[in-house]
Image (cartoon, rainbow, N blue to C red; front, side, top):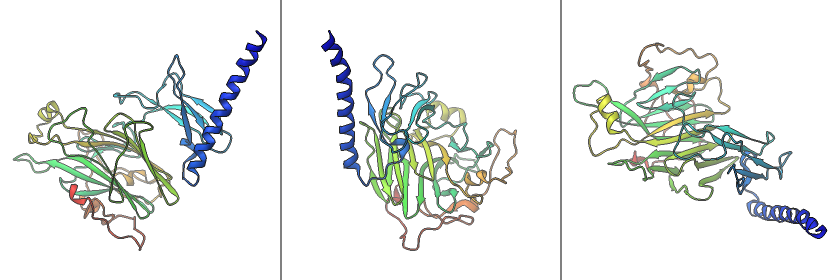
Amino acid sequence: MESNRKLWVILPAIGFVLLVSAIRSVEGKKKGALDPASTNYVLLDPVPRTKQARAFCLARGACRYKILTCPAQCPLRKPKRNKKVKGCFIDCSSKCEATCKFRKARCNGYGSLCYDPRFVGGDGVMFYFHGAKGENFAIVSDDSLHVNAHFIGNRPQGRTRDFTWVQALSVMFDTHTLVIAAKKVQKWDENLDALIVRWDGEAVDVPTDGEAEWRVEAGERYVAVERTDDINTVTVSVSGLLELNINIRPIEAEENRVHNYQLPPDDAFAHLETQFKFKNLTDLVEGVLGKTYRPDYVSPVKVGVAMPMMGGEDKYHTPSLYSPLCKVCRFRRPISHHPMTEGASEY
């Protein structure tokens, strides 16, 4: 009995040593890679009975080599097929915690861009900005960041304006451009992945298995695109600048009928539902959404009406999805940067 008792004490210790050894091996292979402290961890097997996700932290500091377990209220990092369920966010930085957060776009939350298209600004005020089909508009333009949106739409006979939706976003910083877009599909299929990702003009394949994420170093920043559902839902991060949750969805038949969009039968009008979270914006930030984050901003829209409209199409119009130029835009590419045209014809 005594020998068995000693064995049960020794085995976990051996297992922990082996785990640390294996992780140090992984760290060695990662040497030189830019990996943020908050997500610098290795996933462990979940808690057997409750299935709560667990992670072994690698980030240097007080959280190094600690095991974090997701709360019972949100046991999964990536809840499937339910936008109203919170997921577990594991943070191995100095916070050293696992907390419950929405990991999918919330169309009524601050910084959201959904529907045709409806915004909720940084001031919490909801407004509509219609733009025009086939055109591009600056959503955010600041010293270190620029975000454009490409609009698709339809104008039924007799109407004076387009019904519009956002089909693609381009995120520009330094010399880089990340594009997230929805494929044009004739008929929507729940099992079809309509996600398009491009990094500096090159197509990116975001895996659907394993950690289901793609990431790259970009100078002093990292860029990550992580699937938060099997298909058509991702979280995009650019360290120090922004995080956005994106869901791709179509216009469904009942929605088309109720709103009388009169959409053609050969296009499901797949588009993006997006919620932004910005970091380090300046007080002079511009853009349809960006300006609502100014500390002195006062919304000009009529609060209380069914569709409070925000104008300014002329101020925020850009020549292409890849261009940071508009009448009030602030972002400027480095002199060495060459304008990007590859992939522009897709949108």
